[in-house]
Length: 428
Image (cartoon, rainbow, N blue to C red):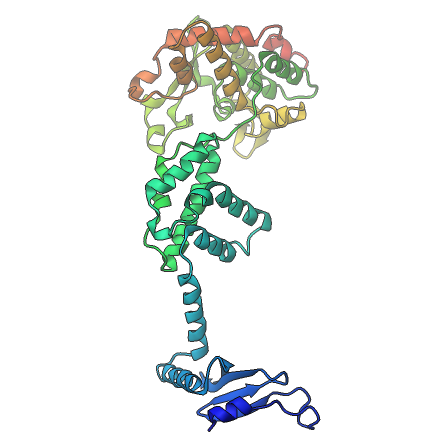
């Protein structure tokens, strides 16, 4: 057994000794405990033990910081763990991790530790973005506050500052990062709640998915002129693009348009009755005929429909050029997007953009004329159903006003553009 004096006077193996060769000197104390004396003179306590049939080493710590008495106590504690079926080395690592976590207190400290452990395997650029969002938007207000003291109103106040800059998407992302930090802290025993989750529905709605759109009418007409003059373009593509622009309907509804949906085409009351199942509705409402949608058709739109019906040999007025296993199908959902890209409008205008072109210009005209009520009607024309309106009446609500706005839009849009018959005269 060792003594304090022996530990204190222990020296490395002499360099001139044939046993040296940079080896450590080992001084045994008993029951697996021994003191290592390195060639440099540094001394370290270790313990040799067996766990799971394998011989292992436990590093207890340096001497003289840990004296003989403390080293023996650590050895005895480790032996007690072995009796309980616990690996002393694993337990030491666990206690070290607990101590590290318990040293964390403020939101910033905990967030940085979460970021260090949570994002190291992610894309480096994204990891930097996450930390910068927290540094810019959260740490200045909440960074120094103990995480247990942070409440939902405090989180909301921090995120409101992001919203006030108009950065609605960023506000939602920051809240998500904060929630990730709180969840990690909960699992680490550092706090009991996630106030960032509570405020999720209190935030302003995210920015809608932004689809490029030409809002200037001269540029919008030029798009129709340019795409209409392209050579070797399938007739259904050109006519579908024209009807899409005239009606501001959703592109998916346009491509799926069928003959039987168009009524009274030879009268001033021509309409396009779109079944509920084709509308952007919940699954339940798609089964309810009360939710079918009616679009008043202008003479310009009727001319497009009649031309398409004359050329089509399918129930769909805009059939695909290819015949599939199920017979003639409508043009694909990428046909118009590809058409606009090939015309040079990548990033400038997409098929769905006609809805923004229509809404922006007709709302501007209505506002300049003092017709404030037109805004609700224009929303209805885009199939944005006003709250509180019974679905059974949506089909014909404001129909005369909708027809008047549709006519004003068609007259504005079609200035100087060829008739649909001329558009497809040289095409197959």
